[in-house]
Each structure stands twice: as structure tokens, then as C-alpha cells.
Length: 133
Ligand code: ZN
Image (cartoon, rainbow, N blue to C red; front, side, top):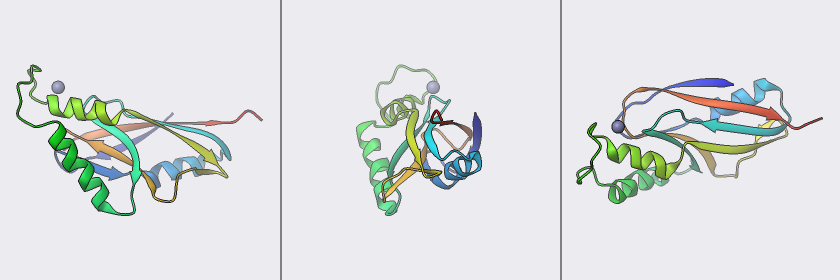
């Protein structure tokens, strides 16, 4: 298992982590297999979406804000229920196939670490598994 340290920059922050994960896959030497990406946090997430046009991520962030307003009658005493809810909506894992020694992503796809209660120091776990020979 590999661990990537991520320092998030603000309350809500999406960071394109595709190059770091691609680098782990390359250095693993795995030509064909599976890459699991897990976020071991309850107020952060991981998602795969367009990383060519940054306005896509801006729209996702803006609409999550509409779907999960900051100030509602939340019960959780810590006061960060919106961050917990957004993290569950986005999910804490992704599975990406490895083909030809690289992550098999669509032309416009990138992997984003999603912070919802930052800034913080976060971890991302990556497991790379080769096909059976
Ligand atoms: Zn909480």
C-alpha cells in the first residue's frame, strides 16, 4: 500500500492528483492490473471527473453547496455536517484499471482529492494489484 500526503489549501478544495497516482503506477512496474484509491477520512473524498476545463470542478463545488447548505438544522455537534454529507455524496474510493503500465482514464478524466473541511493535512491510500501471470 502506498500513501500520498496532501496538504489542502482551503475549506473546500479539489486537487488533481492524477500525476501522483500515475507516478506510483509507473514505479510499480505493473503493466496490467487494478489501482484502488481510498480516502481514510470522513470529511474528504475522491472522484474522477474532467480535469481539462477547471470550470467543471467549480460547478461541482458550487452545486454541492446548493445541495448541502452550510446552515441547516444539523444534529452533529461538531458543526461540520455539510462536509460529512458532501464526502459521502462524492464517495471515498475509486477503482481504475491499469493498461500498458498506465492508468486507463478517458481523454478528459482526472482524479481529484476532494476536501470539504480544510485546510488540513490529509492522506490518500493507493493499492496497485497486478493481473495474475
Ligand atoms: Zn464531524
